[in-house]
Image 1 (cartoon, rainbow, N blue to C red):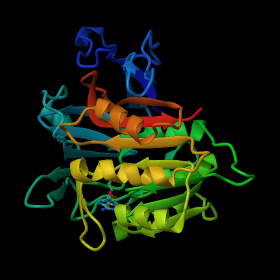
Image 2: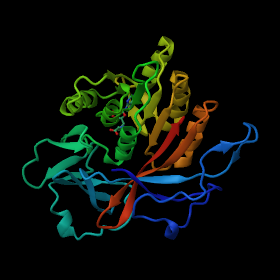
Image 3: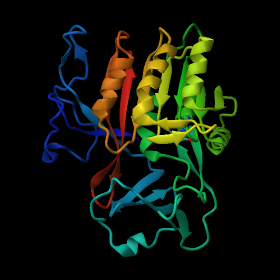
Image 4: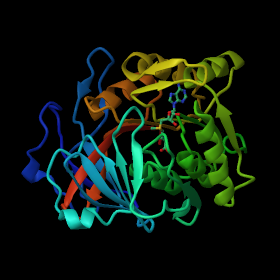
Length: 342
Ligand SMILES: C[S@@+](CC[C@H](N)C(=O)[O-])C[C@H]1O[C@@H](n2cnc3c(N)ncnc32)[C@H](O)[C@@H]1O
């Protein structure tokens, strides 16, 4: 599934390693001398090194067949689709004839775009992850999203491979903000967390519940909450709620269920401050994903270091990318930061 296949920066963080030094295939690459911790006193902290890990989807349920001309040719299970991809600036590797075989193409037309199908619209279908999670995939008239962000799969794998210790004899508590159709919530629950899943979209929350049923996890402790993320966190602070893990995957721009405006550059720092108040003294995990095109994963490092100051632990950062099979290159999709206590 997800694997670390490259790393590329050492302090000073401004200089990324030259492209020819970045391995782009193979399995786990050793990390040489890089270290992510801040050492020293608060006033005199020394940044010893920043390692940027690229986590790559290697889940057979999803394949990126090719990319280029700001589009991607993808295969979800047995269904091949084309969608726009602002981060694919290069040329496609496959000829047009291969791209023309796609069953569905999403065209950026009007506000929401439009799906065009080669033949009949494919019926909804299912994808399995690690034999523990199942997702329903479907085409919707008003979105190019089809129910899953497969570049997130290294996070699901990490969660499944790092089950939490019980807290006072109970499952520890995880909060998944901006959770969409629940992939990370299902991974958290499968790993042994009790989960509060928050999203502003009614269809996404209903879809998450459906994915829970499909996964055969009907009784897993997941609370599905339709709510603005900021309002929910503020209410949890007032209630004195605590969590041992918080995941956040905020969009650049969004709306809460009552039209509350979300703008990442304005709203993320105060939301992280508020989330800090929800971390219990046994907290062990924070994962932040950002896919704003003009940000850097070093921004995740700085935000998470600020959020968890005084708690110990360490911050890891990097990018989420897809292996483009025909082009033998990586398609960068998101930035991530992870704070862990252990
Ligand atoms: C990028 S998606 C998250 C993807 C998800 N982590 C996954 O891997 O499946 C962003 C989500 O944020 C939700 N959202 C946008 N604005 C919100 C807000 N103000 N409060 C809560 N959720 C919001 C959207 O409905 C959408 O489901």
